[in-house]
Image (spheres, rainbow, N blue to C red):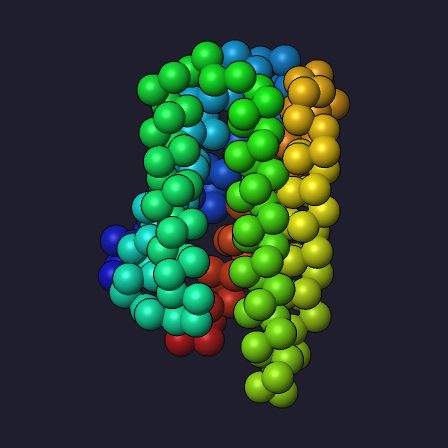
Length: 171
């Protein structure tokens, strides 16, 4: 379990750094975007599937399927580096929508249990917004689009690291 937690920290740091690189150097990122995002998707999908198998929570099948699909998409991006930007944007949009929907479900469950979950609601709406943007605008492979992608990855990695820190503090 410790190796899984170390992997989660690594994933958060790598995703945040990739996002920041996309914000600062959007033209350079376009050259290795497929490989970098493929690696993040592969790691994220594998960790989601492993974590779901270790802790059978609500929406077990959906979370496991999402983990497997993310890992498979990551492999495709690593193997086929010439993956069209439209496919990439569509998959990223679907990932963000699914992540937002899962976070929204978790937030509703926490709210029903009487716990505070405003931050989780906010995270779910941010994910849903980015997902809708990437699905509605899949072909704008410009520096602005890469910067928005970088912003999303930096946000996602940072919120992932923040969640891990809170989880570790509560143990």
